[in-house]
Image (cartoon, rainbow, N blue to C red; front, side, top):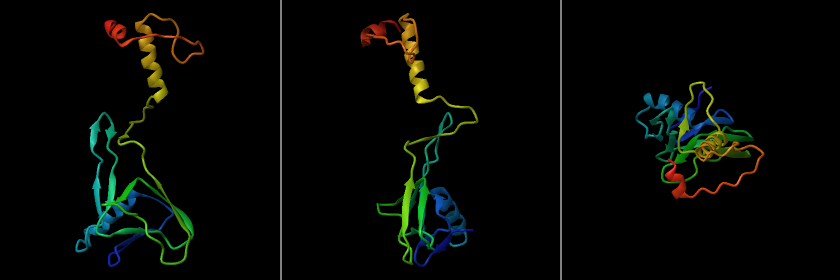
Length: 164
């Protein structure tokens, strides 16, 4: 089922309890192609390729008093992605009927996204351990970081730079 665009009241009426900001924007783009006489509902930024499989996540800003209205039922609404109101405000308005709708926004924590082409990426712990093992190798210290052996390593900036 498609979303409903109430252009007179500037409302995008949802048909589901879980939706992404990208789907809302994408359906609005399709709708707006045949309804360009109405004020814009969205501005989108992001999605830029940073190289190496990194992308800036898209941000969607509601414009011109357009808002999201949940479907008419009691439910928990989950909106994933970066959905905001340009200039501030709340993107979701109340239902017309007397319904209890709890809205949860799930937004990315990072300012960039990573696209992987099927290969597994390293965890932060693996990256940390690899860096520390390389440092230990520079100082001819036996063992590895992350094992159960406790080590004390006193490396100052000057003696580390001398061994580079």
